[in-house]
Amino acid sequence: MKITIITVVYNGEAYIKDCVESVIRQSYGDIEYIVIDGNSSDSTLSILQQYRPHIGHLISEPDSGLYEAINKGINLARGEVVGLLNADDMLANSGVIDAVAKTFALSAGIDAVYGDLNYIMPQSNRVLRQWKSREATASDILSGWMPAHPTLYLKRSLFERHGMYANDLGTAADYDLILRYFYTHRLKAAYLPMLMVNMRAGGVSNNSLTSLCKAFLNDYKALKRNKIPLPVMVILKKKLSKLVQFW
Image 1 (tube, rainbow, N blue to C red):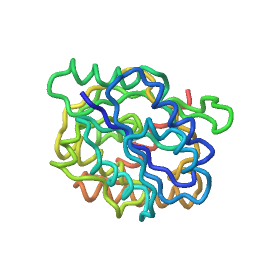
Image 2 (image 1 turned 60 degrees about the vertical axis):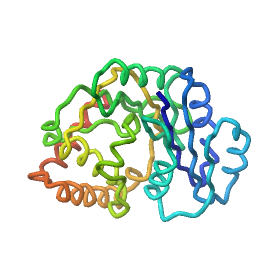
Image 3 (image 1 turned 90 degrees about the vertical axis):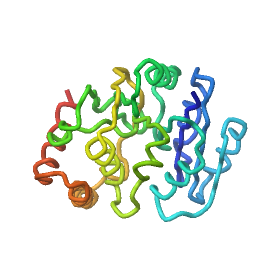
C-alpha cells in the first residue's frame, strides 16, 4: 500500500528541515512525499532542494492559501492513503507510517486511521499538552469530539467521492472535512493508540484573540453547512473537551 504524505509550506525555513527529516526517517518503504511551497521568499526552497531525492513532487508557486495548496497536493497524490504533515510539525518516531499501514491492512473496510498528538514548545520541544484520542462514532461529533487532524490518514477515494477541503472556511476547513466525512457520510475509522505527531504550538488558528474569534465563526459556518444541530453548543463542547489535554 502506497501512502502519500503532503506538506504545505510558506516561509518555513525555521522548521521545515525537522519536518522533512521525520518523513525520511520512516521505516515504511512505500511512501510518496509531496511538498507544496507557496513561493516562499526565505530559504525554504533551498532547504527543500537538499532533500530533493526524497521528495516525489516539489512545487513552488503562489497560491491563494493553505487549503488550495493542500488540494493541489491531493490532486497529485497516487497513494491509496493520504495524510498531511504541517511544515512546523514532525512525525513522532520512525514507525508511525508503518503502524498506519498495518492498521489499514488489519482493519477490514476502514476509510481512515487517526491517533494521538503532542503540542510542543517551538524551541524546546517541551510538551505543553497531549491530545489523546479514542474510538468514536458519528454521534460523538455532536459532543464536540473530533480526531486530531494532523494524525488523520484517509483513503484517497474519499476525496473523489465526498469532496476536498473548502477554500471559504478559513482555519475550519479541516473541521468541515471531518464533519462531512465522519458525520454526514459515516466513514469507518480506526483509532491507532500511539503518539503520531509532535505539533509545534502557535499555529494559524490559535495565535491571537482575533484568530480565535474568527475560528469560532468559521467552526459555526462549518457546522451549519453540514446540518449539525445546536452548532453553538457543539463548539462549546469542542472547546471544553480540550481542557483535559493539559493534564
